[in-house]
Length: 178
Image (cartoon, rainbow, N blue to C red; front, side):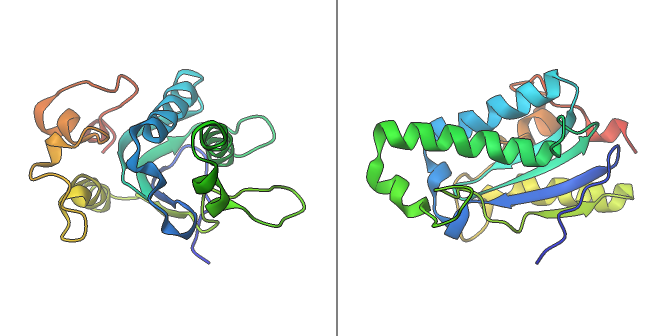
């Protein structure tokens, strides 16, 4: 099991993957659910987002959790909310795809996120900027080859850092933190 514990007020590189690595996030409607959740949590003061990428089957964030969301961890609330919204959309549009996420558990019928999210504390600027580059280069990897320039990938913070394009108002500049 990977380390997923996050201490409040520290900056982390965080990864969450779709259950069984299915490419649920190929469809932009699912990416928009993630963006909406990040925006809402930021507006509520629960998190600061410094960088992100939404890939077809996983996400990477550089973020700081400022406070829990009631009795839940904020990352737990994020995963629960997005899963609930994924389920609603699949129930409406694609019952066959929904069945891929069925689980026989006492507390839920569907599981959209793998249970092994990874959190890495970014304690130095060197580590933080290495992870920032990793995030932005993800869609260029040999496996994905989604774009030829990181700034061309819509669901990423690359254009914010490279071209100062503010498509996502919730982003904060990581360079201001180190």
